[in-house]
Image (cartoon, rainbow, N blue to C red; front, side, top):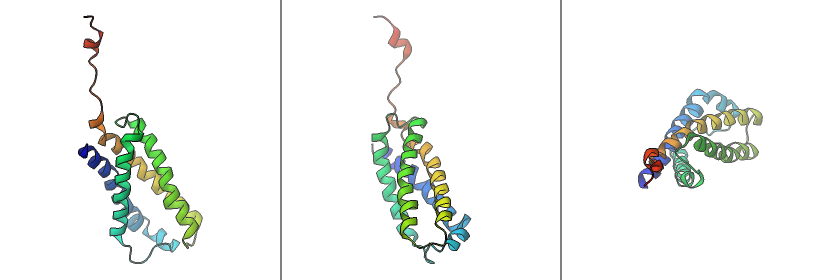
Length: 146
């Protein structure tokens, strides 16, 4: 059980941190700078801590909410719901409260980020749950008459 939690946590944390760092601080750093939304001295440990807590919550919730968590289709359904929830916190609420030069550009870039993030996380969640898969029933044994 602890192994499954750790794998679920890592399925969220690793791609989210790597993508978040590259997306926000490298690839689209100029756009975010032009939006005027980030402080000049981003505090990476706070962002990492946030992702760690989110990952722990998703690692606990995912196997309980997905009917067959090892199946990709169930993982993608969970990821879609998690993405929508995340988007309301990280995009809509931020756009509503924080000063920025263009709300529409911010919403666009953060929506794209959230889609890419959870498109990566979903399949990894399914992989993390492979150990939860019930033992397969041997069809030959199941059909034999005793």
